[in-house]
Length: 163
Length: 233
Image (cartoon, rainbow over all chains, first blue to last red; front, top):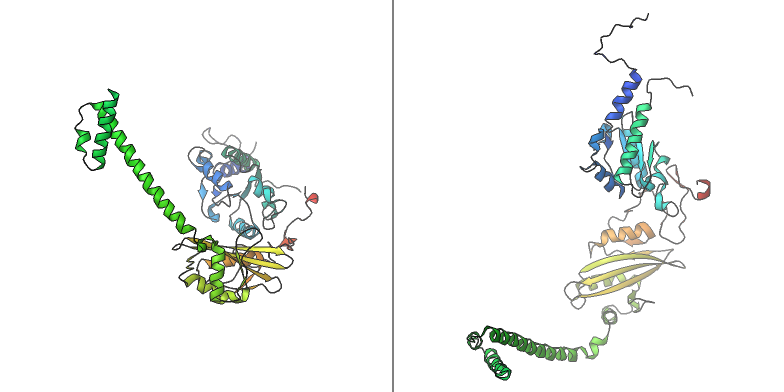
C-alpha cells in the first residue's frame, strides 16, 4: 500500500510527468518564421488558410526567443550558415530543427558545384526531421511536422538515459 | 439596277470626300446608305495608304545617305577617337559589336560619354565581368541613351596581375553596386570607388570565385566543404 494509493477522486488524471511534458510540448510547437529561398513560399502556403498549421497548434513567431521549431526553408549559403547557427543558439530549449527541401538537407542542386552553398544544414545545427522535395508540397511539410510532433511526444525529458 | 446603285454610291462618296456628308446621310434606302459609308471608309483608307507610302519613300531616301550606313558602334568609335585620340583599340568584338577602350583613357573618356551632346549616354544598363583566360580580365559596360535612343557596349581588358580600372561610380551612380559585384566575383579593382567592398559574399571570403583558376576552399569558418563527394555519399 503506497502513500498515494486510492487517494484521488475520479476527476483527477494520474499520468507520468514525462508523458505530460511530452504532450504539452508537442501540441503547441511554435515555429521560427524565416525563409531562405523558394521553400519559404511553400512554408507560407502551409501556414496560410488552406492548409492552416494552427490546426495542429503551430504558429509562426518572428523571434528565435519565442520559437520552439526552426524550419530551415531554403538554400543555406555559407554566409547564412553562420547566421543560422547563431539563430539556433538564440532559441530557448527545448528546440527542434526541420530541414525543409533538398537544399537544406544536402545542398540540393548545388551539391556538386556551388562553392558558396552549405551541403546540408546538419553541418551546423542538429536536425530532427528531413523533409525531401524541391520544394516539398505543404502536405509533405505537414507530414514532417506531424512526425516531429510524434518524436516530441515520445521524448522522455525527465527519464535518465543510460548511454 | 446595280449599275445605278454603284453610280449613286460613287457620286456620294466623292461628295463626302470633299466634305459633304449630307449626301450620304440623305440616302433613304438603308442598305445603299451603309454600302456608301463602307465605300467612303475604304476610299479614305486608300488615300491614307498612298500618303504614308509616299512619306515612307521620302524616309528611305534619307536613310540611304552614307552616314546612316555606319553602325552605331562605328559612329561612336569615330566620335570617341575625335575626342580622345588613341583611346580606341578596336571597334569590333569577335562576335558582338562593341568598342574596346584602353584602360588608361577610360578616366577622361567616361565623362565625355555621359555629357557629350552627340553621345549623351545617360543610362548605364549593366556592367559585366569576364575572365577571358590567359590572364586577361574584362569589364563590359552597356550604355544606353534615353534621349538619342541608341546603345553601345564598351569593353576594357586588363591583365590579371594588375586589374585596375577607373571607377565610373560617381558618373553613373548605378555603377556603385555593379562595380562592387564585379569586384566581388572577379577581383577587378575599380580605382576611385568610394565603397569598394564585397557585396554578395561575406567580407572575410578569400579569392575571386568566378575566375577560371578559382579553387573551392576546403572549409569556411570550420564548416567543411566536401571536395571529393564519393566519401560523402
